[in-house]
Length: 123
Image (cartoon, rainbow, N blue to C red; front, side, top):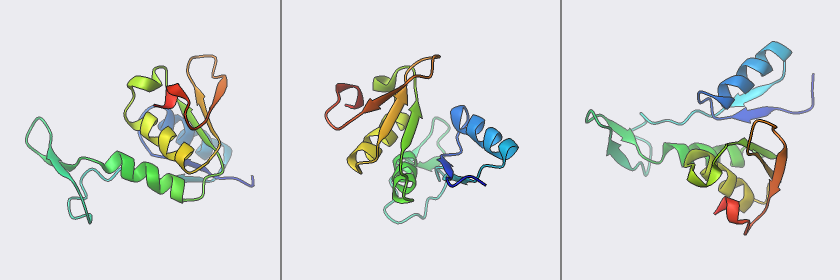
């Protein structure tokens, strides 16, 4: 059993890929899904979607903070256009602010690039 745990947000895309790989390889994982429907969450900012259904507008950033607070020792993010991102960019900024070593893979080569506080790519 490895001495690490993969922490992810349980979203579609790369999170789902990590979940499937962890399950197949027997690597422990900790999933922190955004709670968009937790309308009774203390301090919840409620908004409405296009159909008029209420949701917690900042559930993604809350989830990102929870993942950082879980004690991550490294953040690895994947996004082709990080500057236009909302969720991934917020997670990267949150990890950097917590002084967690943060790496981003910007393209298909998956070459990780270290981002630090003040890096223009992390806003």
